Image (cartoon, rainbow, N blue to C red; front, side, top):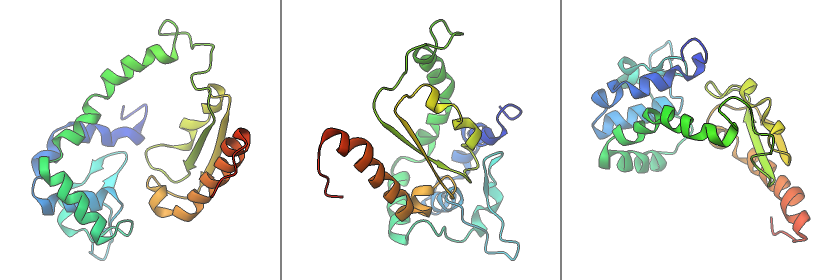
Length: 192
């Protein structure tokens, strides 16, 4: 994975067990979440502790400031919820990726090699590409429209947490798309 999709290197770190060994207390969970939401160290060099290529730099967690993407109240809620059972369970999602990938192949390929000719998704689909996402690079979405006939693609100048970074812009995109592609086709007058 590090050579084919280096932007998914963080997933190897997430599956390693190192993070849940190092991150257990509510304060450690808080700092981990700050790192995932892009907080920087309070040191003069203002480093980030997360990269899509490498995962979490655990040594930097204690020196992180707050993320600008979440309020204190939101962060408190997330910390409280993760602290209930720890982060092992949520990180298991990454440990099951290979099993899920194999299961999902049947939906995309007739015999494991030849793509299915029929579209997978028939309904209207809106995809908002975050142009600065470290993990989900724009090239990865280039061919989405080939399998989704009713596909609308929009772009936003944001990173992985686009909904937090550009909420007004994305909500407008969603509202406009709903008006044009969903409500208008159903003859419904929306209240948006």
